[in-house]
Length: 103
Image 1: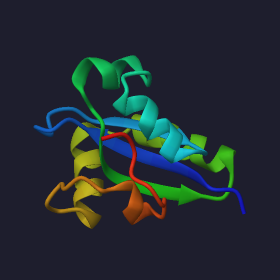
Image 2: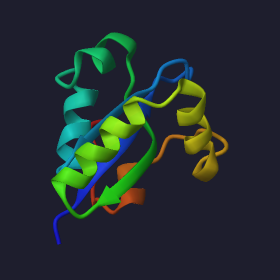
Image 3: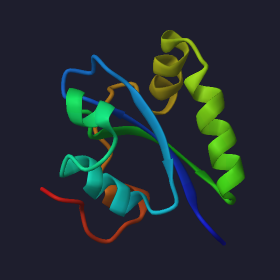
Image 4: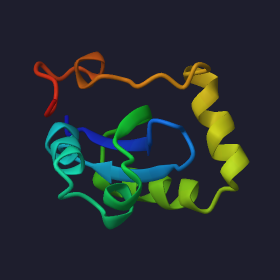
C-alpha cells in the first residue's frame, strides 16, 4: 500500500500553521529542517509536526490538504487539539520512521 501524509507544521511558539502533503514524509521533513522546503516554513521556522493524517492515494491526500487549507484557522487548531491537546511536537519515529530527521 502506498502511504501519503497530510501534515501540520508549526513554529516553536505555535503562532503559525503550515499544511502540506507528501509521499515521503521523512525526506520532506528533512527538507523543511534544512530550509530547503516551502518558503513559508523557511520564513517562519515552521518545522514541528503537530498532526498528520495517512492516506492510501496521492489524490486523497491532495484533496484533504486542499480542503484543510480552506478551513478557518480556528478550525485547524481545534482539529490538531483533538489528538494533540498539548500541541507537542510529534517525532518521526512516532509516525513509524526508523531514524529521526535532521537534528
